[in-house]
Length: 128
Image 1 (spheres, rainbow, N blue to C red):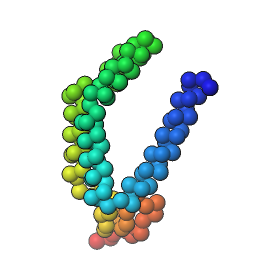
Image 2 (cartoon, rainbow, N blue to C red):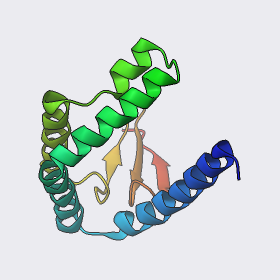
Image 3 (tube, helix red, strand yellow):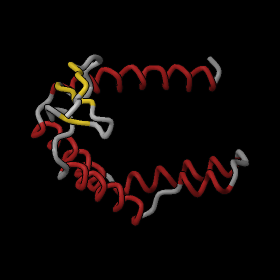
Image 4 (cartoon, helix red, strand yellow):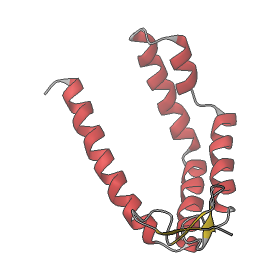
């Protein structure tokens, strides 16, 4: 199997797993979702050295393959970038629950009820 076919297969599998995980997370409580975010932040912190060393190997390979410097810069991880990832996860876990808000309104006066991720909402025009 060629390297590009392996990558395509891996990306398809990863996409399928992400889709499945999103369905599970959509049904999870805010406490469960926040615990997941906290777990991910902790795992990143605990594996920081391994992440950085593996990233260095990836960057060396990218340079050997003549990947552009702008892309290499975006791919490069360092302590500050990892700290930002962890901080971002903690910020998101502190946000109000976006999934289960009911009776929301948009600026165009359309009101709707239900989960944010549902495919159909009970909508009505608000003429007041």
